[in-house]
Image (cartoon, rainbow, N blue to C red; front, side):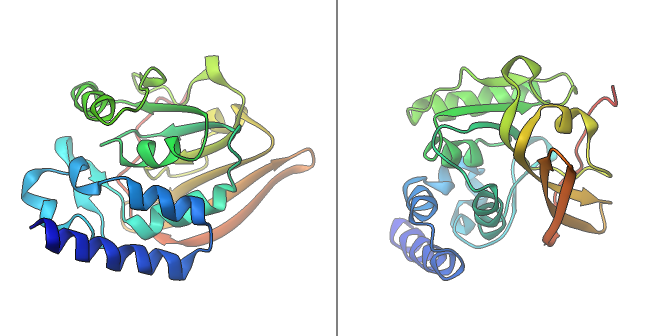
Length: 210
């Protein structure tokens, strides 16, 4: 199985290379073993370019969509970054290879406990992974230079815009469960600049509209 996974991983990495020339992002995908972030019954599909089910009716996102989201964030190593939706921890691990200041939030307590154990075993610092109780973001660590959201909202959440720094970028899926659009929002002194990146499919974002 290991040899088959390696072949699949090589194929996936080559696909990502054809879509991006950012070597740091590609190296992060090469380093992180995706099979460790999904249930046993789906591990043979670990390097297929598709979203896969994980615990508690959540998903691990499609690798090419993750790569596109990260690429559009335009990260610098000292950026203060917020991830909404820790999930299995796969994106957290990739982002940890790219930036020094990373905060992540999750609303499902049993999932976050399992994820922290997994990430700690791989050597990642999980002190800034927080249970949110449905409130969006992490005010105490804001403002954030970059925010990435791994669940779809019906509209751009004001709570996240308030935590985004000037000239900061927010990458977020927007839409219904049937139809979603991946957006890049840049916060400027003159207002918001919104760019459509792709169609997509994510689980719904759940939060209190404070």
